[in-house]
Image (cartoon, rainbow, N blue to C red; front, side):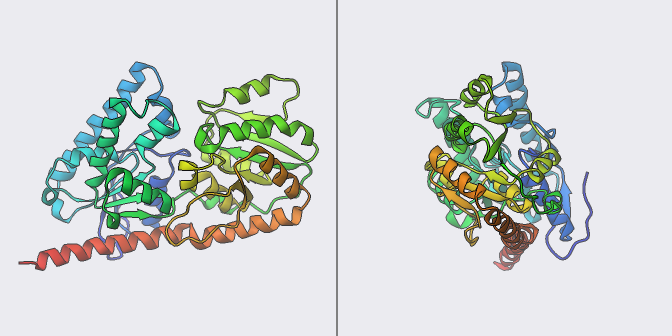
Length: 397
């Protein structure tokens, strides 16, 4: 339903399309929550998929499930495109399209710019890159892969502003899809941080409680994590491992779990945001990404936002990227190598003051650079630029 929040002078933001939400896709819905609290008027017409819906799991499901998903994304977004272009005065409309925005953008790309709204797209990460290179759902040389990449490129080029998560990802998207550099913005992601900020400082424990939250895919370093779990037995008195998540590269970890006295615990079920908050409150150190180069070096995933907001010490690979103008976070970093990860965990277990200090610095960093103020500041500037552009066009003979 439309939300008639008080307007502070910014343009009303119309939200459209078929969108993802929940603990796996928190950015769009939490962006809207933050903008409402800032007094920006929101007209939310998004067809939100159920919380807990997993896009890539559905895309790998049986034919009937895939047909329902693709029908929803294509037909639902075609109807949304018609409503955006013909249901109101498009010339003065600013529309925000949540992830996966490309399906609505593709329909709108066939409409002349003068007949469609200003479009702000939550591109987050590339659909083509996730499907082809992360999850191996189709070979990159296949015609279907090339067509998907062309589909995504055409869609993203229709947007007036494309929002991505890091500077490195911005550069990759510009090159991969031929985007206008001035239209692509690397901004912090938005999470539901209130319960995370309420988490008290950790109670020092021995052994050190280490947690990993994520998907067991190459991006997250599934092979590195499996080797860490394999070698952790000999250090059971120093640190414990708890894994949360699943993925197509989880089979080796499953084999380890079947062995006698595995050195880790594992929750494979999809957890709600509040369940994840509870797990973070009970840990000492959070593991990040260990996928090495390529895409793993281009991201700062949601789980690192969660760990920083929770005030927990975070250990991740040395190569990562950040939103525009964000300094390096106070994270512990190593090479994406299981022996280096284990050695660093042992060093942290021997230095509880370092774990506490890094956790406190993490929360302060999050509040200063990645939290709600950063989201609102960027969006107010973006909306003001669109209003200014509209006024300048109106004065042009």
